Amino acid sequence: MHGLLALSGFTLLFLAFLVFYGWLNNLKITHIPKAAVALSPKRLTPESVRKLASQLAKSPPISIKEQLPPKTGRRYIIVGGGGFLGGWIVSSLLERGEDPKYIRILDIRPPVRDDIILAQSRGVEFIEVNVSDADAVEKAFNAPWPSAISKAALPELTVFHTAANIRFYERHETFLPRSEKVNVTGTENVLRSARSAGASILIYTSSGSVALRRSRLLLWPWELSPPHFLQVVNDDETILPKRHEEFFSNYAVTKLRAERLVRAADKTQSSGGAHGVLRTGCVRPGNGVFGPRGDMLCGAYLIRQTNPSWIANSMQSFCYVENCALAHLCYEARLSETLLGSKNPDIGGQAFMIADPGPVPTYGDVYTTLETLSDGECTFPSVPPTLMLVLAIVMEWYYLGRHLLLVAGYTFAKLLPPIEGDLVNLQPSLFALTSVHLIFDDSRARLPPEKGGLGYRGAWTTFEGLYKTVEEHRSGVGQSGRRSDLAGVSLGFGRGKAKRAVNRANP
Image 1 (cartoon, rainbow, N blue to C red):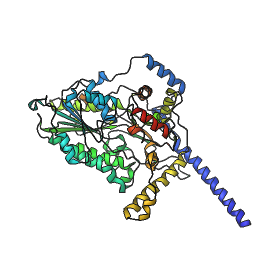
Image 2: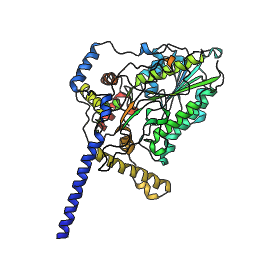
Image 3: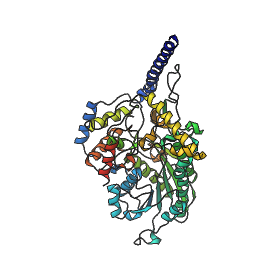
């Protein structure tokens, strides 16, 4: 009897310790460091959101036109142009007056966005291709342009490479080939084909997450804060992670490898063309590219409606998609000027961080904005971060263990069910990406061309981008769920709503 009581007492004491540890760890990994508060001290409230929204509703719509570089008359191949960012690059090219017949989209599946489908009816060409298939990519790049265009008069060719496999939830090296196939091998294929097609400019969409250092969020009781809890990242190459375990996930590892391939290809020979050389550059969008028409972040929140979260206090730079598309066009303009003999500094073969203008928000600011502007339809119930992290670790063990057993040929492993839906996102890499404070310094990109910058400014603040995202979602224009329905972690909340929203958006 005494032994049973002692065991019960020990069990209760141990459970009390776990509860206390979880509570204490939650405090440590959710506080906002003073240095971060100093960078962005003001938080949004429902009242301030309504006030700002009222001001925007009474003002002329924000436009990117005045910041767009002028029409070039060049040919354009947008790899991944049927997707989210690539589609916005296509829209921006058309908005500034480029000939639709000079624009070619390469993507693994046909576009579903109404604006891109309309662009196809105006002459924009689509070729279905998997970038990991070298022969298919080569064939698509060298396919004849419309017969109305004389071959002798073909303009110079620019390539925007935005295609990627965003498996951010995997961090074990055994899964690297899954990300390398598209992100690295695909980029090699695009570079090879661009040179064979005579391209003179290639702009690659990298990721700001290549500079993110992995943190550790289960702390010892005596530790006050996680390592690398506040990261202010810029274009300094010395801050980049060096070892695999320093990157937040395999996605960042492979994006950096691809980026280095692109940068090394600068000034290499390109077949044909007036210049006979390929100039390249990379754009590193600030963590979280969002916007209407198929994002994996804020638009996904609106589609899902109920979004359990544990990162409301995380302060992170965002990048509204039209700002991001603009940065790509700015880089193209700078390289084009260099090819034409500009005396400005040559910035070919470099990488530039990009983020929204204005104050850096917390995820809580984003949540307050979306919940207020959606009249409460989009909600963000809070869940304990330490508990979710422990679940994520268990999820990763199962995900990795099942894979290793299958690879080893154990028959019983086939009986283990795979992790399906967005639950696969609930792994430690998600925490490494979203539970730290991540500020992107894009001051070098904002420098004028004569000082070695892109001349990028950005037209929308993050709040203004969120406002437009909600407005397009309400109108139905911005609902494209091919990517959004797979993003985030719903924990079963709102999945039916998400699927219904996707069905409405893609009849």
